[in-house]
Picture 1 (spheres, helix red, strand yellow):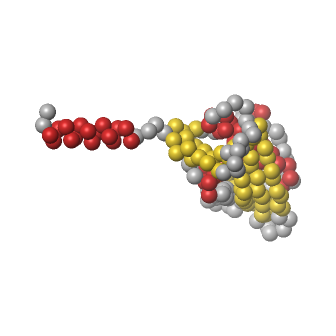
Picture 2: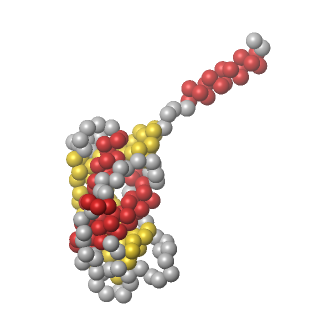
Picture 3: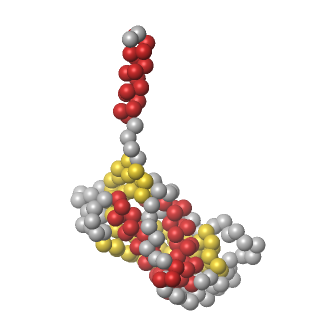
Length: 189
């Protein structure tokens, strides 16, 4: 073997050793359309603004809080989609199923304007060391008429049953479903 071939083989082996497997986790849909609670909305159409997330939660990496209170993440365990985009689309789908209103994520794709905008600002979104998934923040419902806007706080904790990123993803799906139901019941009536 020539010196050049040996160097090339060593370099290739070193590169192969650096590459790790990245695993992505999709959030399963916890609510089939036929199982969605029917919640009347006074708005026939809703535009869902892009969900605002804290820095650690907007990352592709799945964040958890350890026993010392530190927020940590593993570079090889990732959400299947960018979290802000995924949660915005998830909330849009769920509110449409629950209210039967015309619902779309921003930018509004229809020629007429939406009757109201829903804006969600998340303060906390992570799994904790005691086995719960935390989702908290505030939502705003702003009617196009400018009259009768509403806002509300949310603090949702979903138990995590089992271990690993798969169960964290499932808990996030349940938390977003609970948020959609809260917004529909308290903000859209």
